[in-house]
Image 1 (tube, rainbow, N blue to C red):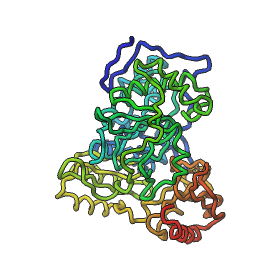
Image 2 (cartoon, helix red, strand yellow; image 1 turned 180 degrees about the vertical axis):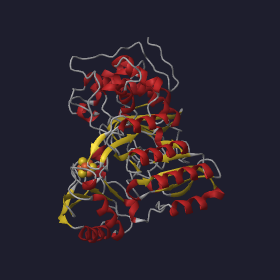
Image 3 (cartoon, rainbow, N blue to C red; image 1 turned 30 degrees about the vertical axis):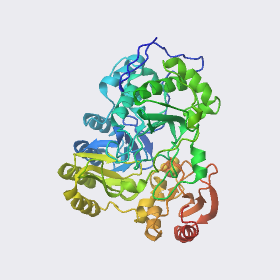
Image 4 (cartoon, protein in one colour; image 1 turned 90 degrees about the vertical axis):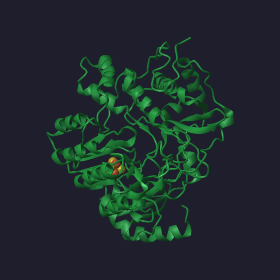
Amino acid sequence: MPSRDTKPGVLLNRASPPTVLAHAVTAPRSSACPGLLRIVPARDGGICRIKLPGGVLSATQARAIADASTRHANGAAELTNRANLQLRGVRSGHEAALSAALIRAGLGPAAELSSAHATANHPHTTDPTALSCADDVRNVMISPAAGRDPHALIDTTPLCGALLTLLQSDPRFVALSPKFALLLDGGEQLARVDHPHDVWFAASPDEAGVRFVFGLAGCPGSAGATATNSTNASVGEHREANGTGALAAVPPSRVPELVRALLHTFLDLAAADATRMRDLLATRSADALLRHAQRYVDFPLARDASLSHWQRHIAADASLRLGAHAQRDDGTWHVGGQPSLGRIDAATLRQLAALAQQHGNGMLHATPWQSVLLPDIATTAVPAVLAKLSALELACDPAQAITHVIACAGSAGCAKGLADTRSDALRLAECLPAGVDVHLSGCPRSCAAAHRAPYTLLAVAPGRYDLYRRDGRPGFGQCVAPQLTIDEAAALLARLARSTPHA
Ligand code: SF4
């Protein structure tokens, strides 16, 4: 029987070696995704992505990012839909200096863990390729209010740390795509559960306490809603995004062991051109994957039919990212605001860092809605923090239309963009009625949204967009009007919102 430690954070069941099939992926995948050390060229300069463990960065790190962005890039930081940050406009010749500055600030992969990748794939622990491999795998999303949300069933923070350690410790995981991602849902009300993830875990009440229900290539089911903003996602979209649905459940102590088993299963069975779990599921059934994963764990692993209609215990509410909301502990609040289209200039980032130190716990939480949360604010300080966020032009009220609009880089920053989506999005927000969620995409790649927005404006020419309404069919949904100007789109969206208020 393999040895097994039930504490999260300990690598488990080492007695079972990977079963590498003839066609299995064993080498690092090439990728065009930006990373800390892989700065990808774009029309407006290089793009550097900074992965934040659990979406959290310290005030000191925020200042380091502000300094690095001023010195080496365009002087701003962008919040991403995975609760990370990225810098754009990295100057030619500044790439190595930028990466070094961010690593010095503690924003890179754990050096001692990346040595595992170096040992297996590269002879030197300081090899940038080894560091880049370790950086790529750090994809675990949790709620920005993890450990603080009054409705959470469990604090996912320690387990998130354990999974990040696991991902960086196994040399074989360099073969995962940088997009391969895990979701760890603690049952918070403030939770993003509409992004399909390769493997998802969701806390569920159990007689013994809490178990984690899990599924592949989808999202946790929701008791009535998987809110994308303040509106509910459609049943059709949920079906589209739900992958295998809930497969089975394990106690929290077994989550790392199960993740390891599922990732080895993916790497054993996936073809070289299969980068995501959904690609593998197109060729193998979920039951076949569980049977294969069984060889890596010493507890029974099979589909639990009683979970086929499992749902989260509470509907997610993304509007809680904005404004002030009470935390689990009496007298403490999290206060959040959203910069326009997720972009923060360096001066604002420094002021947010100062605010977190003055009134919070010195930490900033990035959210997957491209906003910022300051946790642990005392009741007496809430008005001052809200006032400061507003002074910094961060929207703190979900009634503000700008909190419902997202846009990719568009033609100003990306060669594939057919329109200047960011400028058009700002103009649209000025005349959009409250509560209409719209995504402007410069091309069909949909970089700004991992979910399907209720409405998508897909650029077809400068200043011209086709309008799609989400209806459950693949892609953006149904095209309801072609070739609209922004003013025409705003007028039509207002009419559509009046006739279908919960679209
Ligand atoms: S969606 Fe298209 S235009 Fe927009 S950033 Fe992505 S690739 Fe570029």
